[in-house]
Image (tube, rainbow, N blue to C red; front, side, top):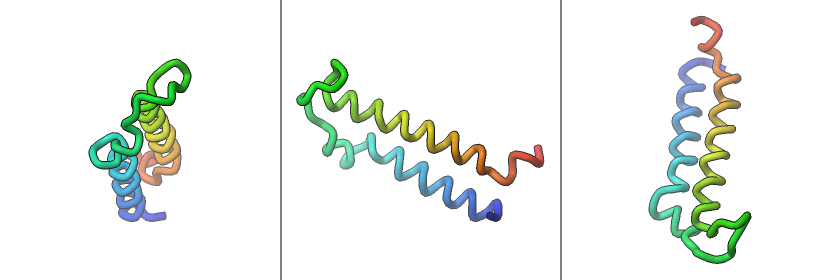
Length: 70
């Protein structure tokens, strides 16, 4: 995979994952009930997508073809 293609994929994935905690995608998770793990669903929604984003960026970091050149 080339560096240019990797950067394009990285930007697209980052935007898609970040948009899940912004309006209008957040309206899907904007509910007070049910209570999951002792927190309202809206908080759970945000924490879930932050964790998914973290692990996705971590995977993309290890797949980065440019990190070996530094």
